[in-house]
Length: 364
Figure 1: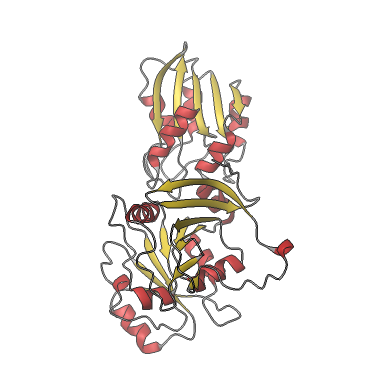
Figure 2: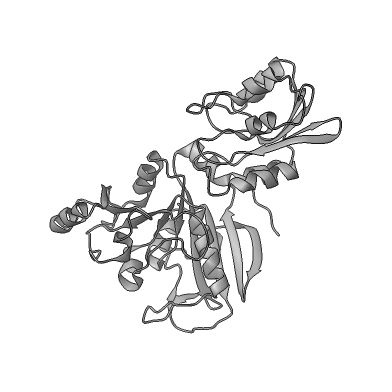
């Protein structure tokens, strides 16, 4: 199963909104085939493993990280059909697929046809592999990751707003890697006005995500970098009924998609409504890179699934903090997360945490 997990990870950034899945087939104590889900719309891991097998797979054991599907995925037939057709003798499954079209039914079909199944092998690792898919398939809402870099004393910028660069070049490459693994990237309007970022993938190989900018009144400059290179990375501007009509017309004339959403109690873009709308478009994951305003709003509304914090060995003193006032006045009321892992990247320390209780985590 560990080898199947390694195979599945080869699909990182290529299978969304479908899961990453790895599979291998063992017969007479020997691995005779392996496969993984290579890209969205392509053959599933089980099919690739069966078709690439050296010899007949009849009576063999199939190891797969996720429950085999039992429904048609566009033009891809159910994997349980192929398992039955080729007389696989035993199926070892990492974890159950929470997709309402599957959710244990694939296992039930196999058992009904006399195929022995074992479920839950390395289940935590298999769950963590597809944490994005699991949330999206069950809620229709994208998995939201916050990423920011700060000093040892918790500052993301100086009092003047200067933030380039708190982190090292190595962790900036990590940031671009994270971008390539998400369907969308979001920053607040303040970051756009102050830093004019491109929000594309440049420091590593990989696709650039869809750029999403909440802007309740359309104050964005028409010369902003996120409005350029739409062939590289499309941009969605999320706005409200307060939007400037002239700016709205100009943006549409530039080919920029403007999405009208609801307002929150402060008259800003309702981020929960925005995420629901993005989810309906097949966007299963969002990376939020700042600034402090949007980070605070997301944390306050508990719309965050994972936080990636880069801590640079620097002291700034007075400056801008990553997260503002959450109206918490007692330690007992703090928001709690669980450590996923911590590691060094260049001279910086990277800490990853998940929202406690939502998804399985492990410390390292």
